[in-house]
Image 1: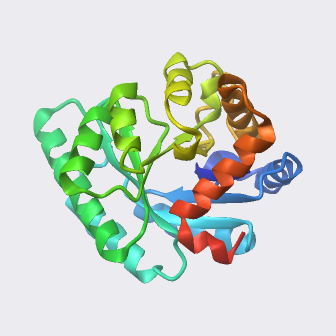
Image 2 (image 1 turned 90 degrees about the vertical axis):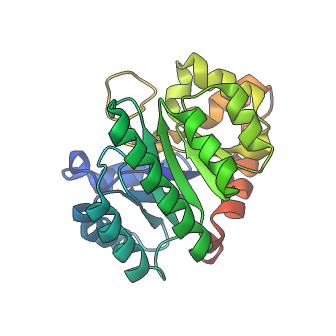
Length: 254
């Protein structure tokens, strides 16, 4: 299994990161992609990736809650500086859960469109955060005609997800699918060919309120297998194939 999106560099893992990685390996997690979404995270994330060479990869993005042109410029510099290292851009996107002001949402959409253009220019996949804004994020993708995309932990309507999937957009499923009716419905309606596995550690645990970690990705795979009434091995094989299709630079590392 491949965890396509998590934050293993978060300080909540500082005391037991190596044990967390060991548990992931024991559970069959073959690779982890971590996402640095603030300028101050990049150096630490790079150090961790370098400490677990061949096992971890990095994307650099922009926390949508921080509606800042300065952060965009700084993270764009980091993307270009570490272009030979990163396997994608993200997460970036929209967050209407925390950002309620309409003016700030307009700026958020503008910055999101800038990140889409960066991904286009660099020919890299874009990992998208779209909390409480799935419809609007997908509308922008359709306008921009950019579909080399992973919708991470998508919480929007299945109808918009199906429309995006028709264009080849991928949806990564976190362990919270164990109890999330919305995510179960998403898995039921989307083709296996459009699904990936993620944990978004340390959040979106299969048990509410507990710290999440990459080993828990097995719960995502098991729930997909149950919902689609297929074998666990089929889910694992398909999601690995899908991951390598979108994160093409991973072929050098898996």
